[in-house]
Length: 58
Image (cartoon, rainbow, N blue to C red; front, side, top):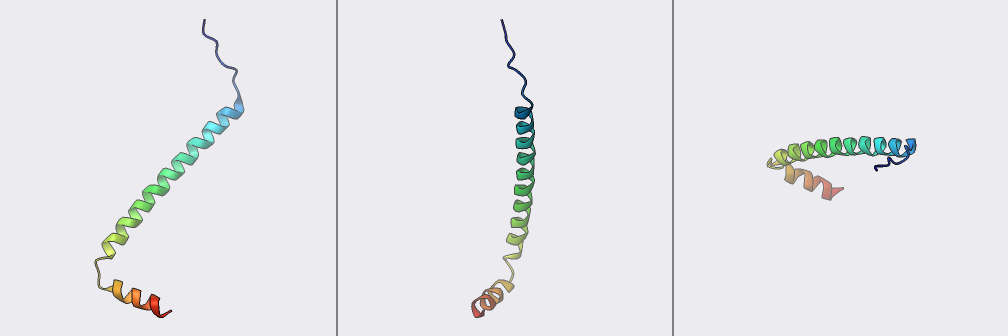
């Protein structure tokens, strides 16, 4: 005999919120990876040393 647990709307709402949060976090991480890839491409340029010098002068 299988007995279904009582249905609780608060649990359902909590699971929906967790799902939305996970999706937002996945989108954020993907955007962060793309930003890092763009920064890595720009790191090869000679402007890096000039930017470091400017930072030190401040």
